[in-house]
Structures are given as structure tokens and as C-alpha cells.
Length: 334
Image: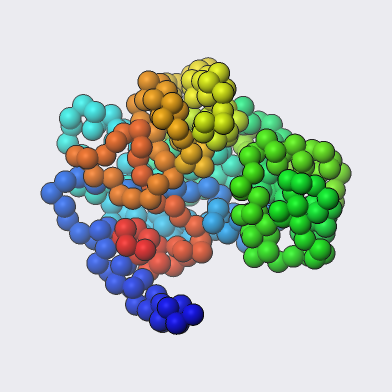
């Protein structure tokens, strides 16, 4: 309690110092690469905004501010081009920043893509290959919709969903986020199985729009010359020891082949779902791709980085909705 009281007044001071004096403002003899991790770009007026975890969303207004701030501090680069330059021993920018989007959300096309074009900003989108162009929904969004519609009380009789059971008719977003966090101890297969068993689609008053973009939208982004497409596996499976060897190969190797067939371009970049991977998965990714990104936080030093374990900086509105807070996030300090 005492520690919390001390930290609270100090936080704005630390944020201000990090914004002004962090690594993003410092010169270095070694070229460095910041890789930013985004998920969803949604206005607060969009119904989907309220079905998403706070740590996953950024408003278009914030994203535009981010692009403006990034131009002040970095050379914005294509991650693929930076990796190629590093592999070939070409000169690298002293401070480079690559923007990445995970999953292939439809709102990336609707709200992020126009801003990328407006600011001529390169980016990489990591697509869940088998789910593009389908009506697939990620389970946290299904759970959020069920809880917010009052159907969560039905969870208590299911051994998997009981971790998220609630008797509140309309829980707030904090309660929803807590329920989702508790469920993450379960496997995706367990959660989807339980949701399907309760016929989740019939429990939600209004049909949920497809979560991810279609192939035409994905190809439109690629055709702009600003957006490279990488693999985020076939189904967003966690690449852990729980996954059989054949399934591991399907998620890593087959996803590349299918994606290359769809976009008619080489796919050289990979993104680990949820940041999870075991030694076998890492070895297979190294055999299949030129580089890969994790969810581990950090700034990449060009002389010491591991190209298949690139670190990133996660960005969402809760921690980056003002220039000062965004810069502090880039600092490497907070």
C-alpha cells in the first residue's frame, strides 16, 4: 500500500523524464531498431472498440499522432528492407523504426491503412493465413460480447468457462478484461470447444462482423507498396510443446507456402502468436524465414540482435495516448 502511494505521484515525473531523455532521443555508435507492435485501430464510436481488451486497441487519432512523433525521432523503415540491409552488410540508419500489425484485423484496413498512405509510412502486417476472408472470431472477443450481453452467468456450469463466470448482467470493461485474463490459463482448443458447446453464436444479440480482413483488402494494402505481408501461422496456434510436430510444421512452414500462393510474393518474415515458442518452433522458423518478431519488449541493437527473436514495443492507448506518454514508451524505460 505504501509503495503504491509513493509510486503514484512519481509516475508522471518518470514519464516526463523518459519522454525527454530516453533512448529514442539519444545517439548511439551502434545502429538500433525499434519495432512497434500494434493490433487494432478503432475509434471509440465503433462497437468493436468496446468488445476489445484495452491492451489491444489504439484510436485513429492516437495512431496519427504516433506517426507524427515517429517522424521526429526515427527513420521509418520497412522491416523486410532493414533485415535485408543488415544481412548484406549495408549501412543502417542510426535510429530506425518499423511498424508492425498482428493478425490482420479488418480495422487495420479501414482505419490504419488510410493513415499509412497519408504519411507514406511503411509497415508489416502479420496475417493469420487460414482465417483471412472468413467469419472467424478470436475467443476473447466472443467472451467479451457474451459477458456484455448478459450471457456470462451461463459460464458457471462449464468447467472451462467457469473461470470467467459472472452473475452480473452488464459487467464493465474492467470486469471483462479480468475474466479474459483468467481464461488465458486454458488452451485455445479448450476455450473454443466450450464456446461452441454452448452455441455462442445464438447467445449474442447481433451478429459479429468478421474480425479479420478479406484477401482483396490484404492485397490492396500490399499493392500500395507500403505494406509487407508476413506469416502469423495458419490458425494463431501457440507454438508450444503441446502442439504435435506435424501441426507445428503446418503452422510455420505451410502458412508460408499458402500465403505466398495468395499474395504472389516471397514471405520472409514471421510473428510468433502470443510470443510463445519452444526450441523446436524456433529452429523451424529459422529454417523457413529470414527473420521473426516476438512479443518480448526491447530495442534491437544491430550488432547483438537475433534476427529470429526480434524484440518489440507494444503500443496501446492506455499507455500511449499523448505525445509525452508515447515518447516515454519509446524510451525503453517505462
